[in-house]
Image (cartoon, rainbow, N blue to C red; front, side, top):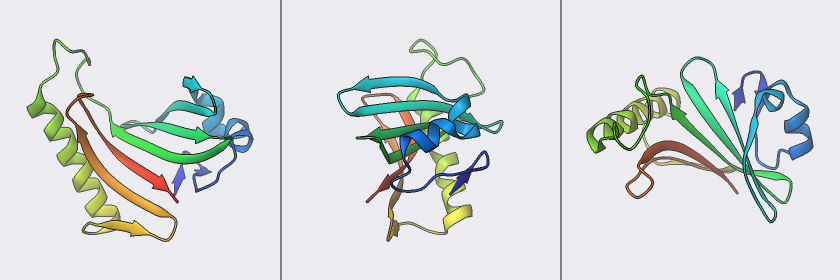
Length: 125
């Protein structure tokens, strides 16, 4: 998959990601032991989180940007379900009907009830 001109693929090395145009616009959002997350905007409508373990990419998370300010006071399950429906439609448009299992990993659209968010997750094998 190519995002902002960078080929995002299984086992992408952290050093190559950081040196890329996308990596230069990404911000470190989490670090613990050998886990590291970077966040970056993708175009005008998507946000991405790149999850590295031991210096290699193991997961990419994509979510459509909300048109309203995001906070617990404005959050609603109905609005988040709409965002998930948008993710589902995007996946059907790009990949056909689920399930999305490939030799390199799996793609799924999820709504996290506890975390309050929906996202597309690419998990690399």
